[in-house]
Length: 330
Image (tube, rainbow, N blue to C red; front, side, top):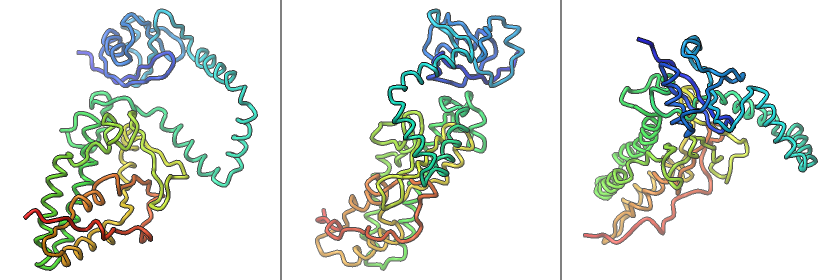
């Protein structure tokens, strides 16, 4: 029995590269044409332009070999084709030559040039990541250290997002145990509302799922996440980016990124809720929706690289007393 190997397939324009597992050239052609959405009669070539049409030769090629699928109306001469494509892009850009020179000069001599250079190096190092692969069989290494129940990368990423949200709920529950008996009834009811709503929202697993709605996910449809900057800034000026779908190393590194509360969870939200429960007027109840949004939703959460995460007090950001209570339904 011939053992299957992991390979990479791409189209001539290098717009899509996908990881697959195949045990023969026929199997590779079938899976590759399906993944790339190209005709099944495409020629299969190596990156240097060599056409692969012999099963025996195919078996001599190592795992992770890159195969280029060439349509009948396309040409592929290996690196010559790549150079031609690059040259065409350069000539197209010549009309903006002066502006490009100015931007390059500013980049080289700018105050953030060292940091920008590090970002570019990191992106280049990630070019070989198997980003488009989704199933375990397509990128076995990515799943190292994870539960066998995860069949796709998105399964694992959804679980990672849910774990963070569940942790915030546990933090709230633990904090409320310190409250007085008077406050406990209000806080207990609020926790029940929290839990019901979290179940309805499936614990916001969509935050890290690249196939989720654009309104819910924090990444693009390819899985790239961008740092949203420190709590008091609109953007990240250091251009922190990461794609945890690309490799095991990126996935592990992404776990160090923070879902940061702008209005702080432990210093602001929990103490405020306890105090509000202590002073809750008759006929009123805690406005659980307001506090729910602060703890679990994008209204108060930012995805932040560890370098932009500020551990001190978030000055100027606090809960608004006008939102603490609603009429009791009892």
